[in-house]
Length: 543
Ligand code: VG1
Ligand code: CO
Image 1 (cartoon, rainbow, N blue to C red):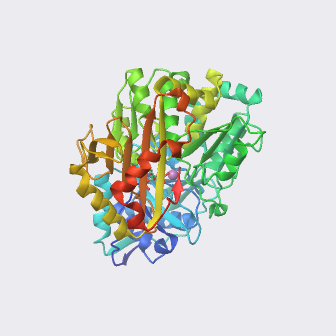
Image 2 (cartoon, rainbow, N blue to C red; image 1 turned 90 degrees about the vertical axis):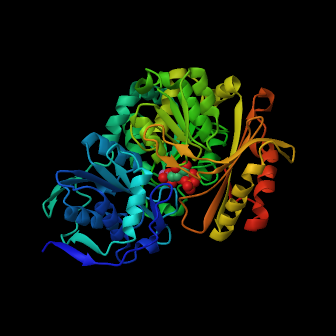
Image 3 (tube, protein in one colour; image 1 turned 180 degrees about the vertical axis):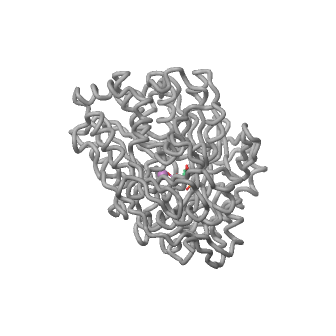
């Protein structure tokens, strides 16, 4: 029999995090570990006959092995067709675009995104539904429940598919189509942006440095920016996806993309710098001698969206994750459109986008996107910025300064405390939660607290409720401190402390962020006893 049913024992640790299941490669490499998750997924999904599935990943170590396994299991599930990116490569936004363009029933994204890769690094898997976006919580919870109880997996014993060769093959009656990894995505970008104006900008000498961090964004950025838009060869660096990202940590922020920052602050700096993460859904935009915060980026894109062909009719609304700064809210207010506040993670934007309640969304963690797909999209954001520069004639820095002049500056920083023992992190959060009701109306270290709660979200479209999405403490002047534990790490717990303060006074816009936020850092320490509980004097990363 070509389709085999193999006995197995369930795993109990496949709880999805903020963005799918992420574990060390060594965990994924255990016998039937990946199979267990995929079988749980397939058991939860309806019958697959006649349906198409999309499969692709960021090219990290274990990607190819995982693709072959998933193809065999998809054949056993009875899919009519699987579309797989050449070499097993598809960026996360490209998976979303392919699902939508081909009318697929869903897709499997193989990535641990910004987490390091390689044999000792991380691997991840996530299911996206037919709208192209991450499965909602009710689906991921059902997969988790099933993963803890299944006792057999179903898999074809067919031969490996030649993933590098474009074209169709049959695997136990299922059509496997190896597709160009970039084509569908590039086609979509052409419908959104003024490629002619961008071509003219590059022809006039505009210089860009795009750092793909040896991750999956490289082929997309090279094909579109250099191949199609005329950016000089070499504008895209670290452009070949490597299994271990060349040892780089493909998390585009000023700390991890240190080399790019160096170039952007050098005397001969290009006009604009950009970077994307492991699976190319995140972006960092840098001006000459000027770092753009992700929250400001979303606000600038929203403010000027009408300059870009794909958004010329204006925006239905915007959405931001709760810890993201309120800069977008201020722009939305002035545009007369709604701004939604969602929990962290892209899956919460899906319903708002589907219902056409919002057009743009973003997160403080270097994620920006729109209704063109149902994932955040790194290269899309960079193209949006270049299009704005071309259409407005303004520099990156001038666009951000204009935002500050008009709306004040939302001074912002995130402090991460990584690899804390899980019990200590849980104690810290429990202590905070226990103190919440006593805080409003009190003054702590000179900070007058107006509101303190554990963020809960009711989806305005389907009414589903998500509790415990982060502790927030809001001061009477609107300043905020937010505490939550990361849901994407693979080692102990990571505490994220998000700090925001609104600064209307233009003479203080250039104040160093950590200095401007010092009173809030002190407040965070007083409320959460971070040093005592974690034993850490300083955050591991400040962005
Ligand atoms: C982090 C970010 C969150 C983002 C998620 C997935 O989650 O904070 O904003 O949506 O990563 O991004 P957490 O739970 O670790 O804070 V990606 O590019 O890693 O898929
Ligand atoms: Co990512």
